[in-house]
Image 1 (cartoon, one colour):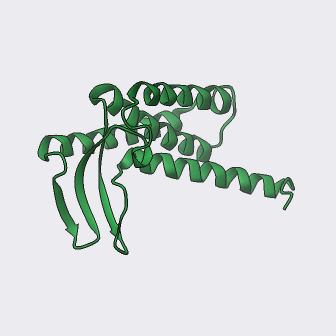
Image 2 (image 1 turned 180 degrees about the vertical axis):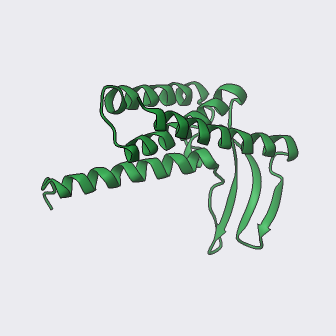
Length: 157
């Protein structure tokens, strides 16, 4: 039961934590390595908040909200439900993202961010693989639920 979910979660958590450890060991905070000129950099940032630094300095609130979210998702959407392989993959990706950033907050007191993009002269906030997992997981959940409601005639638009 939930074999794919567990494998996907572990795989992405290991990748996320390995890359963060490589960045932490080999770079100084705010050090930046240009990968694609004027577009993509690896920049080591220690984010004490959530997305865009929201709730910065509120480590306990962020830890507790992550734990609460994991518990809520598991008991409301995963445990006791028959999930398709696609749903297991999506929940695995989402879980991995939440766990990856949770581990950082517990271990270091901040999240290690490093993916830094400059798009049309806008320096997008630095992020990491766990953040990507959260965004993709949420997007895919919304998409498959919307698709399912349209397919079942539940779309009232």
